Length: 108
Image (cartoon, rainbow, N blue to C red; front, side):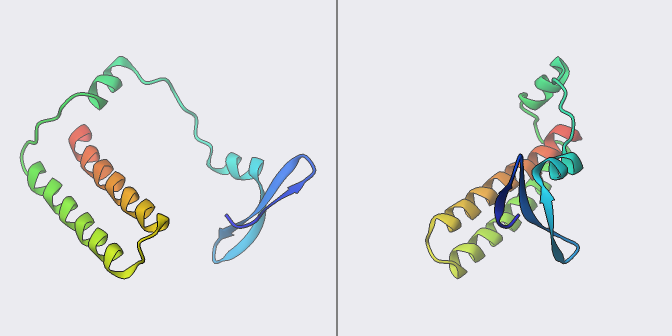
């Protein structure tokens, strides 16, 4: 997204698509990417909030993910100034690491 402007009832913004910016309304953009949400089943909740002990090669794969994310975090800290954006980037890496490992734990 780039600049947001008010065009009557509809908010419009410039959206990067296929190597160029195009003008889109929020309604159109949400229509393009809006996915329906469904209430989680009791089984899905149990899977999400239950400890999943590593099995097979999972522990090794968790460590591979952690090492890759740590390398990215070190690069971030080494080449960017200490600022709010750096802090947000590190938080995003932390979340990414969790989600990568959760995808292994919860879906295998």
